[in-house]
Length: 441
Image (cartoon, rainbow, N blue to C red; front, top):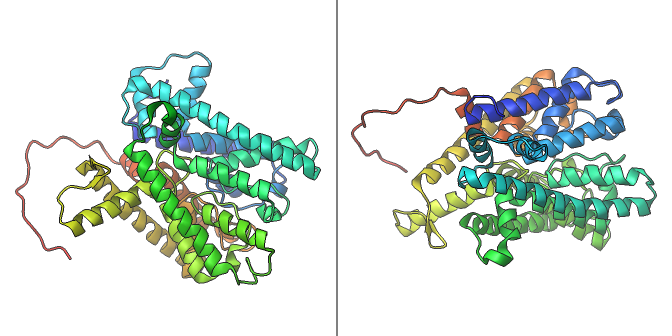
């Protein structure tokens, strides 16, 4: 089914191929109201990487057909290309080989044996359908009551997919801020964003919890770390913006509460906004930037360095403070390979964000605060922006847009996967070097 490339190269090639197809489809005259090739490419990258940074305004610059293409690209990008292809193959009754299952396991970063991958993929598809069906029904009814008529279904489907896939796209005429005080829309989108950000292994574990009565170590770390980050996000927005007349200040009490909840959740790679981010205070933006950089759980519809990476780094710090040689959590020992990988992910991601921010500052004369925020948003596949109108991307040079596209791609696929795809296969060493200590700290 899949070409004979290494798993990292095939995953990178599949995402790149879908982006190319998406660009061609979005440039069809029936799909847009006159956009350039570079903007069509940017929107395709943003949709496939489930980011949501905008070079155009989807509600105005794309026809309903074009908006439908965006929704499909977001859904495929959110599920993962290999996983989506496997689901399609199963639906048409196609048999999958052992190598195909290994590649899907690589994309899902699953420790399961290849024999269990098909069952996992089926569960992923079922849970996705179930979660999104709830969102579609609620949002469609809400928009129908508002008077959108037959268009209510399209609005419900698009924003359900965008929210569950943690993509910061919307096709409301005046943006998501139109519903800043709407309990139904806000809570439904928050539900979808959270479910999409937990990651498919955690969702599968929760789905079977009544029967298994056991949470995996990954589920425990994801749920605890996610809960802490949600509290940090929600409380920081409420505390720092409550009296800001340009954001929460001056709004009714219930709208302030909803804004605090929504903007506390959305930087976890969702990217929808009910406030104007350029009006936020600098301390709030600093916290939001950190949350965007961290992102969601592994094998989720979001980006960032992942909450498990942050959890492992904290556990490493804790073990050093306690003078322990091994890193443990909930009665389980963390393999050294995962410890090394978490440090590698953190290092690569930090270098990428710093280098890209500097490049954006030089190429487009963007200030430090804006550059770091935009690049963190791109890397975390979030979609929030400090730029004018729908976002900074519409004001950037072609180089600036290409730079953000590269960061979005690396953020969705993962820095390690990109490097492995570009590197040659290492040959096993037949010797080891002598060990020597160096001073640290």
